[in-house]
Image (cartoon, rainbow, N blue to C red):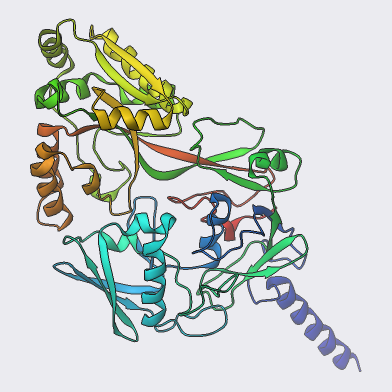
Length: 473
Protein backbone atom coordinates (compact mmCIF):
# COMPACT_ATOMS: atom_id res chain seq x y z
CA UNK A 1 0.00 0.00 0.00
CA UNK A 2 2.84 2.43 0.86
CA UNK A 3 4.46 1.70 -2.52
CA UNK A 4 1.21 2.52 -4.32
CA UNK A 5 0.85 5.81 -2.39
CA UNK A 6 4.50 6.72 -3.11
CA UNK A 7 4.05 5.96 -6.80
CA UNK A 8 0.90 8.11 -6.91
CA UNK A 9 2.67 11.06 -5.25
CA UNK A 10 5.54 10.82 -7.75
CA UNK A 11 3.11 10.94 -10.67
CA UNK A 12 1.37 14.00 -9.19
CA UNK A 13 4.70 15.78 -8.71
CA UNK A 14 5.76 15.07 -12.30
CA UNK A 15 2.48 16.34 -13.68
CA UNK A 16 2.66 19.46 -11.49
CA UNK A 17 6.18 20.23 -12.69
CA UNK A 18 5.12 19.89 -16.32
CA UNK A 19 2.13 22.20 -15.81
CA UNK A 20 4.31 24.77 -14.08
CA UNK A 21 6.89 24.75 -16.85
CA UNK A 22 4.58 25.18 -19.82
CA UNK A 23 1.63 27.40 -20.61
CA UNK A 24 -1.55 26.25 -22.34
CA UNK A 25 0.12 26.27 -25.77
CA UNK A 26 3.23 24.44 -24.74
CA UNK A 27 5.27 27.65 -24.45
CA UNK A 28 7.48 28.59 -21.56
CA UNK A 29 5.85 30.95 -19.07
CA UNK A 30 7.74 34.01 -17.87
CA UNK A 31 9.34 32.33 -14.88
CA UNK A 32 8.67 28.68 -15.57
CA UNK A 33 5.92 28.97 -12.95
CA UNK A 34 2.29 27.96 -12.93
CA UNK A 35 0.78 31.37 -12.27
CA UNK A 36 -1.07 33.14 -15.07
CA UNK A 37 0.80 36.07 -16.56
CA UNK A 38 -0.64 39.60 -16.56
CA UNK A 39 -1.71 40.63 -20.08
CA UNK A 40 0.20 43.54 -21.61
CA UNK A 41 -2.12 46.23 -22.98
CA UNK A 42 -1.41 47.98 -26.29
CA UNK A 43 -3.52 50.59 -28.12
CA UNK A 44 -5.17 50.04 -31.50
CA UNK A 45 -8.18 51.19 -33.53
CA UNK A 46 -10.86 48.50 -33.73
CA UNK A 47 -12.81 50.48 -36.31
CA UNK A 48 -9.80 50.66 -38.62
CA UNK A 49 -8.99 46.98 -38.24
CA UNK A 50 -5.80 44.97 -38.55
CA UNK A 51 -5.72 44.21 -42.25
CA UNK A 52 -2.21 45.38 -43.19
CA UNK A 53 -3.35 46.63 -46.59
CA UNK A 54 -6.35 48.57 -45.32
CA UNK A 55 -5.06 50.10 -42.07
CA UNK A 56 -4.27 53.81 -42.06
CA UNK A 57 -2.92 54.76 -38.64
CA UNK A 58 0.55 54.40 -37.24
CA UNK A 59 -1.04 52.95 -34.09
CA UNK A 60 -2.32 49.92 -36.05
CA UNK A 61 0.71 49.57 -38.31
CA UNK A 62 2.76 48.98 -35.16
CA UNK A 63 0.69 45.85 -34.47
CA UNK A 64 1.17 44.32 -37.93
CA UNK A 65 4.61 42.71 -37.32
CA UNK A 66 3.08 40.86 -34.37
CA UNK A 67 0.49 39.15 -36.59
CA UNK A 68 2.15 39.02 -40.01
CA UNK A 69 5.55 37.92 -41.27
CA UNK A 70 7.44 39.06 -44.37
CA UNK A 71 10.03 37.22 -46.40
CA UNK A 72 12.67 39.06 -44.36
CA UNK A 73 13.01 41.25 -41.31
CA UNK A 74 16.00 43.47 -40.53
CA UNK A 75 18.24 43.72 -37.51
CA UNK A 76 19.47 46.99 -35.98
CA UNK A 77 22.11 47.30 -38.71
CA UNK A 78 19.67 46.61 -41.56
CA UNK A 79 21.10 43.18 -42.26
CA UNK A 80 18.32 41.13 -43.88
CA UNK A 81 17.18 38.36 -41.51
CA UNK A 82 15.32 35.42 -43.05
CA UNK A 83 11.72 35.04 -41.89
CA UNK A 84 9.50 33.24 -44.42
CA UNK A 85 12.43 33.15 -46.87
CA UNK A 86 15.31 30.68 -46.69
CA UNK A 87 17.64 32.50 -49.04
CA UNK A 88 18.11 34.86 -51.99
CA UNK A 89 20.30 34.84 -55.10
CA UNK A 90 21.07 37.76 -57.41
CA UNK A 91 21.51 37.90 -61.16
CA UNK A 92 21.45 41.34 -62.74
CA UNK A 93 18.06 42.94 -62.04
CA UNK A 94 16.64 39.64 -60.75
CA UNK A 95 16.53 38.61 -57.08
CA UNK A 96 15.27 35.04 -56.59
CA UNK A 97 13.86 34.21 -53.16
CA UNK A 98 13.18 30.71 -51.84
CA UNK A 99 10.23 30.22 -49.48
CA UNK A 100 10.57 28.05 -46.37
CA UNK A 101 8.45 24.95 -47.16
CA UNK A 102 7.76 24.47 -43.44
CA UNK A 103 6.17 27.87 -42.86
CA UNK A 104 2.41 28.06 -42.40
CA UNK A 105 -0.23 30.66 -41.74
CA UNK A 106 -1.97 30.64 -38.38
CA UNK A 107 -4.78 28.52 -39.88
CA UNK A 108 -2.19 25.78 -40.71
CA UNK A 109 -2.19 26.43 -44.48
CA UNK A 110 1.23 26.23 -46.13
CA UNK A 111 2.64 29.51 -47.51
CA UNK A 112 3.24 29.40 -51.28
CA UNK A 113 4.59 31.61 -54.03
CA UNK A 114 1.02 32.59 -54.95
CA UNK A 115 0.63 34.18 -51.50
CA UNK A 116 3.88 36.11 -51.91
CA UNK A 117 3.02 37.46 -55.38
CA UNK A 118 -0.48 38.41 -54.19
CA UNK A 119 0.89 40.21 -51.14
CA UNK A 120 3.57 41.98 -53.17
CA UNK A 121 0.96 43.43 -55.54
CA UNK A 122 -0.99 44.78 -52.56
CA UNK A 123 2.15 46.15 -50.90
CA UNK A 124 3.32 47.88 -54.07
CA UNK A 125 0.05 49.89 -54.16
CA UNK A 126 0.21 50.66 -50.43
CA UNK A 127 1.43 54.07 -49.30
CA UNK A 128 3.00 52.61 -46.16
CA UNK A 129 4.65 49.48 -47.60
CA UNK A 130 5.11 50.77 -51.14
CA UNK A 131 7.95 53.08 -50.08
CA UNK A 132 10.00 49.97 -49.25
CA UNK A 133 9.62 48.74 -52.81
CA UNK A 134 10.60 51.81 -54.85
CA UNK A 135 13.33 49.87 -56.64
CA UNK A 136 11.16 46.79 -57.30
CA UNK A 137 9.14 46.68 -60.51
CA UNK A 138 7.65 43.18 -60.33
CA UNK A 139 7.30 39.85 -58.53
CA UNK A 140 6.89 36.58 -60.48
CA UNK A 141 6.16 33.03 -59.35
CA UNK A 142 8.97 30.67 -60.33
CA UNK A 143 7.60 27.59 -58.55
CA UNK A 144 5.41 26.87 -55.52
CA UNK A 145 8.39 27.60 -53.27
CA UNK A 146 10.21 30.27 -55.24
CA UNK A 147 9.58 33.78 -56.58
CA UNK A 148 11.79 36.33 -58.23
CA UNK A 149 11.70 40.10 -57.89
CA UNK A 150 12.67 42.42 -60.73
CA UNK A 151 14.44 45.63 -59.70
CA UNK A 152 14.78 48.82 -61.74
CA UNK A 153 18.56 48.60 -61.32
CA UNK A 154 20.72 45.69 -60.06
CA UNK A 155 20.50 45.75 -56.26
CA UNK A 156 22.28 43.31 -53.95
CA UNK A 157 20.71 44.95 -50.88
CA UNK A 158 17.06 44.52 -51.90
CA UNK A 159 16.34 41.56 -49.56
CA UNK A 160 16.22 44.01 -46.63
CA UNK A 161 13.22 45.70 -48.28
CA UNK A 162 11.20 42.49 -48.68
CA UNK A 163 9.54 42.89 -45.29
CA UNK A 164 5.98 43.50 -46.50
CA UNK A 165 3.32 41.33 -44.76
CA UNK A 166 2.47 38.02 -46.45
CA UNK A 167 -1.24 37.16 -46.37
CA UNK A 168 -3.14 34.30 -48.06
CA UNK A 169 -3.94 34.69 -51.74
CA UNK A 170 -7.36 36.34 -52.12
CA UNK A 171 -7.79 37.34 -48.46
CA UNK A 172 -7.51 41.14 -48.63
CA UNK A 173 -11.27 41.54 -48.14
CA UNK A 174 -11.08 39.88 -44.71
CA UNK A 175 -11.04 42.12 -41.63
CA UNK A 176 -7.98 40.32 -40.26
CA UNK A 177 -6.40 37.89 -42.73
CA UNK A 178 -4.43 34.96 -41.35
CA UNK A 179 -0.78 35.80 -40.84
CA UNK A 180 2.42 33.93 -40.12
CA UNK A 181 3.69 36.16 -37.30
CA UNK A 182 4.13 35.22 -33.64
CA UNK A 183 0.54 36.07 -32.63
CA UNK A 184 -3.07 35.49 -33.71
CA UNK A 185 -5.83 38.07 -33.24
CA UNK A 186 -9.18 37.41 -31.57
CA UNK A 187 -11.88 40.10 -31.40
CA UNK A 188 -13.28 40.97 -27.93
CA UNK A 189 -15.70 43.50 -26.48
CA UNK A 190 -12.80 45.69 -25.27
CA UNK A 191 -10.95 45.45 -28.58
CA UNK A 192 -9.05 42.23 -29.08
CA UNK A 193 -6.39 39.84 -27.83
CA UNK A 194 -3.20 38.47 -29.31
CA UNK A 195 -2.33 34.89 -28.40
CA UNK A 196 0.46 32.59 -29.49
CA UNK A 197 0.49 31.33 -33.07
CA UNK A 198 1.27 27.64 -32.68
CA UNK A 199 2.73 27.54 -36.21
CA UNK A 200 5.29 30.26 -35.55
CA UNK A 201 8.74 28.61 -35.35
CA UNK A 202 10.64 28.62 -32.04
CA UNK A 203 8.06 30.83 -30.36
CA UNK A 204 8.69 31.37 -26.63
CA UNK A 205 6.36 33.80 -24.93
CA UNK A 206 6.99 35.58 -21.63
CA UNK A 207 3.33 36.65 -21.47
CA UNK A 208 0.37 34.41 -22.31
CA UNK A 209 -1.64 37.07 -24.15
CA UNK A 210 -1.62 40.70 -25.28
CA UNK A 211 -4.74 42.83 -24.81
CA UNK A 212 -5.46 45.33 -27.56
CA UNK A 213 -7.37 48.29 -26.15
CA UNK A 214 -9.65 50.11 -28.56
CA UNK A 215 -8.65 53.79 -28.81
CA UNK A 216 -10.83 56.32 -30.61
CA UNK A 217 -8.59 59.36 -30.07
CA UNK A 218 -4.90 58.66 -30.69
CA UNK A 219 -3.93 62.15 -29.49
CA UNK A 220 -4.47 61.07 -25.86
CA UNK A 221 -2.32 57.93 -25.86
CA UNK A 222 0.12 59.41 -23.37
CA UNK A 223 -2.70 59.92 -20.87
CA UNK A 224 -3.73 56.29 -21.25
CA UNK A 225 -0.18 55.22 -20.46
CA UNK A 226 0.07 57.49 -17.43
CA UNK A 227 -3.17 56.25 -15.83
CA UNK A 228 -2.46 52.61 -16.65
CA UNK A 229 -5.04 51.97 -19.37
CA UNK A 230 -2.20 50.70 -21.56
CA UNK A 231 1.36 49.55 -21.05
CA UNK A 232 3.11 50.94 -24.13
CA UNK A 233 2.59 53.48 -26.93
CA UNK A 234 4.53 54.66 -29.94
CA UNK A 235 5.04 58.13 -31.41
CA UNK A 236 7.02 58.69 -34.62
CA UNK A 237 7.31 62.40 -33.65
CA UNK A 238 6.24 63.43 -37.16
CA UNK A 239 4.28 66.31 -35.60
CA UNK A 240 7.56 68.04 -34.79
CA UNK A 241 7.15 67.93 -31.02
CA UNK A 242 7.59 65.46 -28.18
CA UNK A 243 5.82 64.86 -24.88
CA UNK A 244 7.85 64.01 -21.82
CA UNK A 245 6.00 61.64 -19.49
CA UNK A 246 6.94 59.64 -16.41
CA UNK A 247 7.54 56.32 -18.17
CA UNK A 248 10.29 54.22 -19.64
CA UNK A 249 11.28 55.02 -23.22
CA UNK A 250 13.39 53.75 -26.09
CA UNK A 251 14.17 55.41 -29.41
CA UNK A 252 12.97 53.74 -32.61
CA UNK A 253 14.97 54.06 -35.83
CA UNK A 254 12.64 55.40 -38.56
CA UNK A 255 15.27 55.45 -41.32
CA UNK A 256 14.10 58.99 -42.13
CA UNK A 257 16.93 61.06 -43.58
CA UNK A 258 16.80 64.78 -42.70
CA UNK A 259 18.88 66.82 -45.14
CA UNK A 260 19.48 70.27 -46.60
CA UNK A 261 18.61 70.58 -50.27
CA UNK A 262 20.52 73.10 -52.38
CA UNK A 263 19.11 75.27 -55.13
CA UNK A 264 21.37 74.06 -57.94
CA UNK A 265 20.16 76.88 -60.19
CA UNK A 266 21.85 79.77 -58.38
CA UNK A 267 25.28 80.35 -56.86
CA UNK A 268 25.11 76.86 -55.30
CA UNK A 269 25.64 75.40 -58.73
CA UNK A 270 29.25 75.68 -57.49
CA UNK A 271 30.03 72.27 -55.95
CA UNK A 272 32.86 73.61 -53.79
CA UNK A 273 30.44 76.07 -52.17
CA UNK A 274 28.18 73.14 -51.35
CA UNK A 275 31.07 71.18 -49.84
CA UNK A 276 32.13 74.15 -47.74
CA UNK A 277 28.67 74.68 -46.25
CA UNK A 278 28.49 70.98 -45.35
CA UNK A 279 31.82 71.11 -43.53
CA UNK A 280 30.82 74.13 -41.41
CA UNK A 281 27.81 72.38 -39.87
CA UNK A 282 27.90 70.56 -36.53
CA UNK A 283 25.44 67.72 -37.12
CA UNK A 284 25.36 66.61 -33.47
CA UNK A 285 24.33 70.10 -32.33
CA UNK A 286 21.66 70.22 -35.06
CA UNK A 287 20.29 66.87 -33.89
CA UNK A 288 20.21 67.87 -30.22
CA UNK A 289 18.94 71.43 -30.67
CA UNK A 290 16.62 70.77 -33.58
CA UNK A 291 15.28 67.27 -32.87
CA UNK A 292 15.83 67.02 -29.11
CA UNK A 293 18.33 64.20 -29.67
CA UNK A 294 15.79 61.84 -31.24
CA UNK A 295 17.98 60.36 -33.93
CA UNK A 296 21.57 59.99 -35.05
CA UNK A 297 23.74 62.55 -36.78
CA UNK A 298 25.27 61.56 -40.11
CA UNK A 299 27.84 62.86 -42.59
CA UNK A 300 26.87 60.27 -45.20
CA UNK A 301 23.62 59.99 -47.18
CA UNK A 302 22.73 56.67 -45.52
CA UNK A 303 21.68 55.50 -42.11
CA UNK A 304 24.98 55.30 -40.15
CA UNK A 305 23.63 52.12 -38.53
CA UNK A 306 23.59 50.39 -41.93
CA UNK A 307 26.17 47.60 -42.10
CA UNK A 308 27.32 48.78 -45.55
CA UNK A 309 27.93 52.35 -44.28
CA UNK A 310 30.67 51.28 -41.88
CA UNK A 311 33.85 53.27 -42.49
CA UNK A 312 32.24 55.77 -44.87
CA UNK A 313 33.03 59.45 -44.20
CA UNK A 314 32.09 62.95 -45.32
CA UNK A 315 34.23 65.62 -47.09
CA UNK A 316 37.89 65.97 -46.14
CA UNK A 317 37.89 69.77 -46.40
CA UNK A 318 38.87 71.35 -43.05
CA UNK A 319 36.65 73.78 -41.15
CA UNK A 320 39.15 76.65 -41.59
CA UNK A 321 39.47 76.01 -45.33
CA UNK A 322 35.68 75.91 -45.72
CA UNK A 323 35.20 79.09 -43.70
CA UNK A 324 37.85 80.99 -45.68
CA UNK A 325 36.46 79.84 -49.04
CA UNK A 326 32.87 80.77 -48.18
CA UNK A 327 33.86 84.17 -46.77
CA UNK A 328 35.59 85.11 -50.01
CA UNK A 329 33.06 83.49 -52.35
CA UNK A 330 29.90 84.82 -50.70
CA UNK A 331 31.03 88.20 -49.43
CA UNK A 332 27.96 89.89 -47.93
CA UNK A 333 25.51 87.49 -49.56
CA UNK A 334 22.85 86.19 -47.15
CA UNK A 335 21.96 82.49 -47.53
CA UNK A 336 18.17 82.06 -47.68
CA UNK A 337 16.99 78.95 -45.77
CA UNK A 338 13.41 77.81 -46.32
CA UNK A 339 11.57 75.65 -43.78
CA UNK A 340 8.07 74.40 -42.93
CA UNK A 341 6.68 76.54 -40.10
CA UNK A 342 4.23 73.77 -39.13
CA UNK A 343 7.01 71.53 -37.79
CA UNK A 344 8.88 72.87 -34.74
CA UNK A 345 11.65 70.28 -34.99
CA UNK A 346 12.50 71.37 -38.52
CA UNK A 347 12.14 75.06 -37.66
CA UNK A 348 14.64 74.67 -34.80
CA UNK A 349 16.87 72.70 -37.17
CA UNK A 350 16.90 75.56 -39.71
CA UNK A 351 17.56 78.13 -36.97
CA UNK A 352 20.48 76.08 -35.67
CA UNK A 353 21.96 75.84 -39.18
CA UNK A 354 21.69 79.63 -39.57
CA UNK A 355 23.27 80.16 -36.16
CA UNK A 356 26.21 77.88 -36.98
CA UNK A 357 26.80 79.68 -40.26
CA UNK A 358 26.69 83.02 -38.42
CA UNK A 359 29.37 81.81 -35.99
CA UNK A 360 31.55 81.11 -39.03
CA UNK A 361 30.92 84.65 -40.31
CA UNK A 362 28.41 83.59 -42.99
CA UNK A 363 25.13 85.52 -43.13
CA UNK A 364 21.98 83.38 -43.27
CA UNK A 365 18.27 84.01 -42.79
CA UNK A 366 15.40 81.59 -42.12
CA UNK A 367 12.03 81.91 -43.82
CA UNK A 368 9.40 79.74 -42.08
CA UNK A 369 6.21 79.27 -44.06
CA UNK A 370 3.29 76.79 -44.11
CA UNK A 371 3.79 73.59 -46.11
CA UNK A 372 1.74 74.66 -49.14
CA UNK A 373 3.57 77.98 -49.39
CA UNK A 374 6.90 76.21 -48.99
CA UNK A 375 6.09 73.90 -51.92
CA UNK A 376 5.28 76.94 -54.07
CA UNK A 377 8.59 78.61 -53.12
CA UNK A 378 10.53 75.45 -53.98
CA UNK A 379 8.76 75.20 -57.33
CA UNK A 380 9.64 78.85 -58.03
CA UNK A 381 13.26 78.37 -56.94
CA UNK A 382 12.92 81.02 -54.21
CA UNK A 383 15.49 79.59 -51.80
CA UNK A 384 19.16 78.70 -51.39
CA UNK A 385 18.61 75.81 -48.98
CA UNK A 386 15.55 74.09 -47.57
CA UNK A 387 15.10 71.52 -44.81
CA UNK A 388 13.74 68.23 -46.16
CA UNK A 389 13.03 64.71 -44.94
CA UNK A 390 13.04 61.45 -46.91
CA UNK A 391 11.93 58.01 -45.73
CA UNK A 392 14.55 55.63 -47.03
CA UNK A 393 13.82 52.02 -47.88
CA UNK A 394 15.82 49.37 -46.02
CA UNK A 395 18.25 49.08 -48.94
CA UNK A 396 19.08 52.80 -48.46
CA UNK A 397 18.02 53.69 -52.00
CA UNK A 398 18.63 57.46 -52.31
CA UNK A 399 18.12 57.40 -56.08
CA UNK A 400 14.99 59.60 -55.87
CA UNK A 401 17.08 62.37 -54.25
CA UNK A 402 19.59 62.46 -57.12
CA UNK A 403 17.48 63.98 -59.86
CA UNK A 404 19.17 67.31 -60.64
CA UNK A 405 21.00 67.56 -63.96
CA UNK A 406 24.36 67.87 -62.21
CA UNK A 407 23.50 64.89 -59.96
CA UNK A 408 23.61 62.38 -62.81
CA UNK A 409 27.22 61.32 -62.19
CA UNK A 410 26.47 60.80 -58.51
CA UNK A 411 23.30 58.88 -59.40
CA UNK A 412 25.10 56.59 -61.86
CA UNK A 413 27.82 55.83 -59.31
CA UNK A 414 25.23 55.18 -56.64
CA UNK A 415 23.45 52.60 -58.79
CA UNK A 416 26.72 50.76 -59.44
CA UNK A 417 27.27 50.82 -55.67
CA UNK A 418 23.82 49.22 -55.18
CA UNK A 419 24.77 46.55 -57.70
CA UNK A 420 27.82 45.62 -55.63
CA UNK A 421 30.26 46.73 -58.33
CA UNK A 422 31.43 49.99 -56.73
CA UNK A 423 32.92 50.03 -53.20
CA UNK A 424 31.29 52.35 -50.67
CA UNK A 425 34.33 54.65 -50.29
CA UNK A 426 34.44 55.16 -54.09
CA UNK A 427 30.78 56.22 -54.13
CA UNK A 428 31.34 58.57 -51.20
CA UNK A 429 34.29 60.18 -53.02
CA UNK A 430 31.90 61.09 -55.86
CA UNK A 431 29.13 62.17 -53.48
CA UNK A 432 31.47 64.38 -51.43
CA UNK A 433 32.88 65.93 -54.59
CA UNK A 434 29.45 66.87 -55.93
CA UNK A 435 27.59 67.27 -52.59
CA UNK A 436 24.08 67.22 -54.13
CA UNK A 437 22.57 67.71 -50.66
CA UNK A 438 23.81 67.84 -47.07
CA UNK A 439 22.87 64.85 -44.87
CA UNK A 440 22.11 66.04 -41.33
CA UNK A 441 20.66 63.16 -39.32
CA UNK A 442 18.47 60.09 -39.25
CA UNK A 443 15.32 60.98 -37.34
CA UNK A 444 13.94 58.56 -34.71
CA UNK A 445 10.60 58.03 -33.02
CA UNK A 446 10.03 56.86 -29.44
CA UNK A 447 8.22 54.00 -27.75
CA UNK A 448 7.11 54.80 -24.19
CA UNK A 449 6.20 52.04 -21.77
CA UNK A 450 5.10 51.34 -18.24
CA UNK A 451 7.97 51.09 -15.76
CA UNK A 452 6.46 47.77 -14.74
CA UNK A 453 7.45 46.21 -18.07
CA UNK A 454 10.16 43.60 -17.56
CA UNK A 455 12.28 41.68 -20.07
CA UNK A 456 13.83 44.70 -21.78
CA UNK A 457 12.32 46.86 -24.51
CA UNK A 458 14.47 46.56 -27.64
CA UNK A 459 12.88 48.11 -30.76
CA UNK A 460 14.16 47.42 -34.26
CA UNK A 461 13.88 49.78 -37.25
CA UNK A 462 10.23 50.84 -37.72
CA UNK A 463 9.20 48.11 -35.26
CA UNK A 464 8.67 49.49 -31.73
CA UNK A 465 7.33 46.19 -30.33
CA UNK A 466 10.00 44.00 -31.96
CA UNK A 467 10.78 41.92 -28.86
CA UNK A 468 7.28 41.97 -27.34
CA UNK A 469 7.49 38.19 -26.86
CA UNK A 470 10.08 38.87 -24.11
CA UNK A 471 8.02 41.47 -22.22
CA UNK A 472 6.14 40.71 -19.05
CA UNK A 473 4.60 42.55 -16.08
